[in-house]
Length: 28
Figure (tube, rainbow, N blue to C red):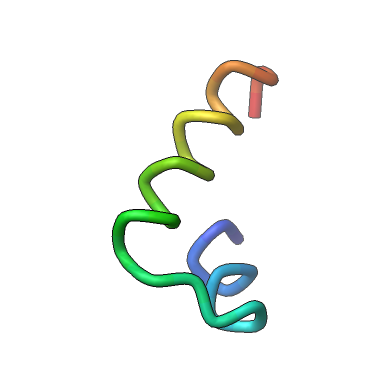
């Protein structure tokens, strides 16, 4: 789900890692 979201917003690898960390903090 996170990867698809990143593709939709055009996030690069570094941004994707940041979003994954944020999602883990939020309990995803």
